[in-house]
Image (tube, rainbow, N blue to C red; front, top):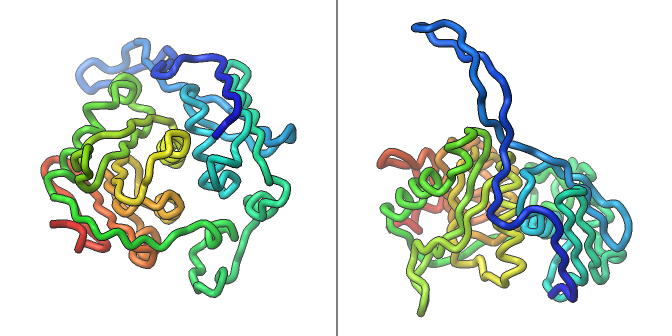
Length: 283
């Protein structure tokens, strides 16, 4: 785990927003001047062992979860023991990490390089990057979930996201317990995250789980974004067996989910949902 963690800037839980002048048009009144609340976004530059690695654009809060999850998803952080010092300065928009063994990390060397052919003999041409083939996990979780839990988690996305209610400009995601354990009931909410980007939401959940040592093999993720191939790849890297969305899936997203062993439920809202892949996990 990190030897030293510093965090400068916004306190956890802050959800800053901005006001902007706008003209609202209605058929009844025509145009009227008013002030609208809009979501904020900010660039954050990540440094690893003193060298600039990447810049991500995200919502300006909980940058530690966001950047750690991003590095986990890209295969840069593979274990908690490898994470040394972590310095997050949200006011400056920087995140400095000390990561043991980074120089020998193959994921860092091929970061964002396009990979056209099938990878690692798995014949999955839908892997965009070579790191996807290295990091994606085939999931074989055996637990089942109740249909009502799918709808409850989808509904909680709406009730938990106060910032969305204010701005309409963020995605949100939930990490929940999928199966009963000795002390945690199925459906228990373990984390809630918001961000302007749907990919960022999953990185935030991944980062929180990584930093807190949460086992994801029996968990469920519910979020508001479209279930595209890149989203399914992130869920696979996390090792989460069930993905619930209030939105639609894509054909390539479902193809990957079927291959990787992920249960996908879409259009989960207003008392209904569609189950597309690995439906045997639904009781």
